[in-house]
Image 1 (tube, rainbow, N blue to C red):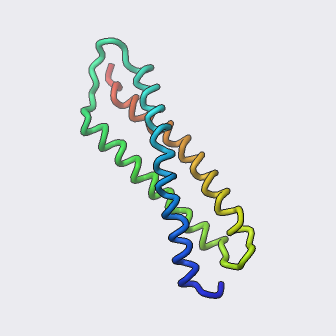
Image 2 (image 1 turned 90 degrees about the vertical axis):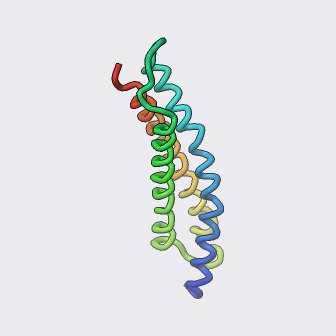
Image 3 (image 1 turned 30 degrees about the vertical axis):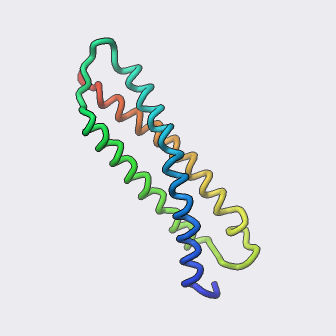
Length: 124
């Protein structure tokens, strides 16, 4: 690496622009997991044991955990990345890491949303 400060700045710029896409990609899977769990767990007349504020707090905690997990991309970047022109890391591997990580996070969002939905009706 020729200029570490410039490489660090370009790396942060690259990943932070994509954090918004990552977060938006997790919304629908989390809501899907939540809605399917509440449909399966709740029957007509069941009482929800969590209020709207509690549900919001659980989803907020999940979002914070997802963003902490997203920050692991910096570890991969500084372990395997390079600023050499034409490097495979810059051409394709960053994108591959982003896609694979987002798909894995979407799976975890479905599971997390399902767990929140099951928690809402856990006492019946």
